Amino acid sequence: MKRRNFISKSVGAATALTLLGLSACKDKSNTKSDSQNINHSKTNPLFFKLSLAQWSLHRALFNKEMQHLDFAAKARQFNFEGLEYVNAFFHDKANDKAFLSEMNSRANSEGLQNVLIMIDGEGALADQDNAKRLQAIENHYKWVEAAHYLGCHAIRVNLAGGVHADEAAKASLDSLSKLSDFAAGSNINILVENHGGFSSNGAWMDQVFSKVKNKNCGTLPDFGNFCIEKDNNGHCIEAYDKFQGIKDLLPYAKAISAKSYDFNDEGDETQIDYYKTIKLIKDSGYNGFIGVEYEGKNTSEEKGIILTRDLLIRAGTQVS
Image (cartoon, rainbow, N blue to C red):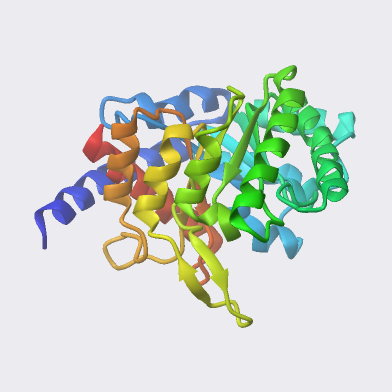
C-alpha cells in the first residue's frame, strides 16, 4: 500500500469513528456544538466547513421517498454544518414566507446553517435573445429574495443559452451585472457553476469573471462538471481538464462543490483526485464551505454521501 494511502486510511478511520461517535452519543440539544467538532477539533483541523448539497439526495426526493422539509434532519444525521438547497425541490415556494419560515425552523432546530440555493429552470442568462435573457434575469429575483429570507449567502445560477463564445461572454457579463446589482441590497452573492456548455470551459469562465466588477459575483467550482459537449446519447465528446478548470475558477470562488461519482476499495474517488484538488483549494486561500454532491449510481445516495464526506475529511486533514 502506498504511504499516502496508508496515512489517508488511518486518518480517515479515526475521523470516521469520531463522527460516528458524535452521531450515536449526542442528542439534538447539542447539535450545534457537534457540527462544530467536525471542523474545529484537534483531531480534525479542517481549513473548510462541510455542507451537504441537496442534489446528493435527488433520487430519494424525486421518488417521494424523502420530503424537502426533511433535508435538514437528514444532513444532521451525517454531521454536516451547512445546507445547500436546490430550487427544483421547492420550485413553487420562492414567495411562500410560511414555507420558507418552516425551512428556517428545521435548519435552526438541527443547528445547521443555510448556505445557498442552486437555481435551475429559470431561463438562460447567456441567451442571444435579449428579451428572453432579460426575462431570465427577472425570474431569478424571487430566488435572491428567498435566499435572503433563509439567511443564505448566495444563489447559484447558470450561464446557459449561448451559441458563440464571445457573444455568450458579453451576454453573461450583462446578466451577471444586472442580477448582482439587484442582489447587492440583500447581501446575496451571485455564483456561477461550471455546469455544461461554455461554463465548463475554465478559460472561458476566467475570461468572463476577469471582467466582472460586482464584488458579490463569483464562481462555484464543481469538481466534476467539465464536460463542454455531449453527443445524442449523453456521452461527453469534449471535456475540459478538471484540475485546470478548478484552477481557473478558484480565484473567483465563493463556494465549492465536491462532486463524486464512484469509489475504489480504499474510499478514493475513481475519476477525481481529491488530494490534489483539496491541496489546490487550500493553497488558494479559500476557507469557506465545500458542499458534498454525490451523483453516482453504483451505491446508495446515503453511502455515497458518507464516502464523499470522509474522503474530503481525509484529504483536508492531510493539507490542514
